[in-house]
Image 1 (tube, rainbow, N blue to C red):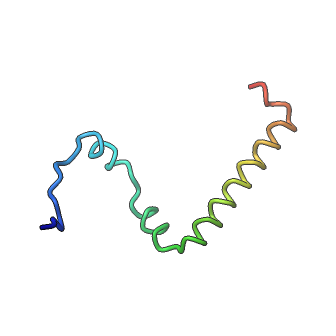
Image 2: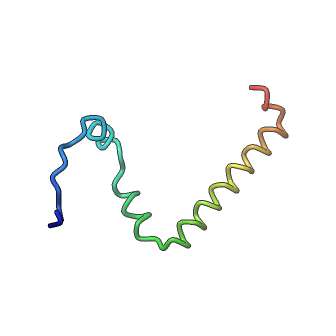
Length: 63
């Protein structure tokens, strides 16, 4: 005997955070393939590294 759709009571913490989630971004990302998501993540990581290098070069790393 298996339950296909067990009823789980809503978690108040999860419900509080849900109002701040932009579902259009979630849907947009779910339309991507796994490979597309990984490429997007890699571009983001490259951009973050570029920002770190620029910060270090400008002498702002102590802030």
